[in-house]
Length: 172
Ligand code: S3P
Image 1 (spheres, rainbow, N blue to C red):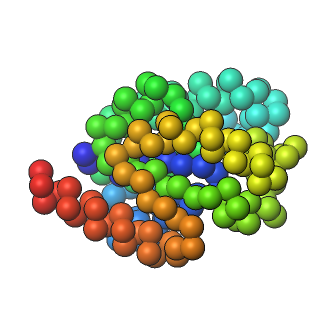
Image 2 (cartoon, rainbow, N blue to C red):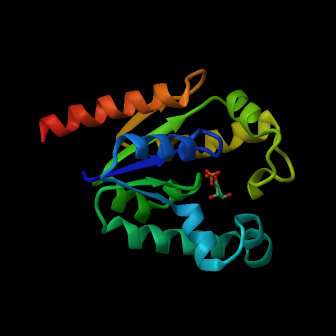
């Protein structure tokens, strides 16, 4: 369990939490899978979806996760759809996987000014976000822990993760 993996919906705080966690865990490397895909493709996520399609994006996403899953001491921040892939879950659940959950209203408020999410570009309503949560939550819940992020600051969420991580390290 040498990687810390963050999953959950867009707007659940994965990237911000991962950055803050990295400040607490200096021996860990921060890996943002979406950023890695953008680097490899030399395109923004929105452009990849528009030019090459979601299927292509999902293949690249799974390939990159596969590559990083072998390394250790990483804080891996996944894109919101990555944990729906069974192979990805199998690879990563040997690690400390955390589902950052949030209510649709919370996600709506966090993302309403943001147009960088292709899946919410046509409709970013609370109803659409809720629909995605309903489709996905049973997959997210296969992570080892769930942390509810509504009304919590990034620092509070990181504190919870660190406490859980210490408990696990002491047991092993
Ligand atoms: C997606 C979430 C995005 C990005 C892509 C697809 C999803 O990442 O991977 O737009 O399917 O939920 P974030 O969760 O970091 O926004």
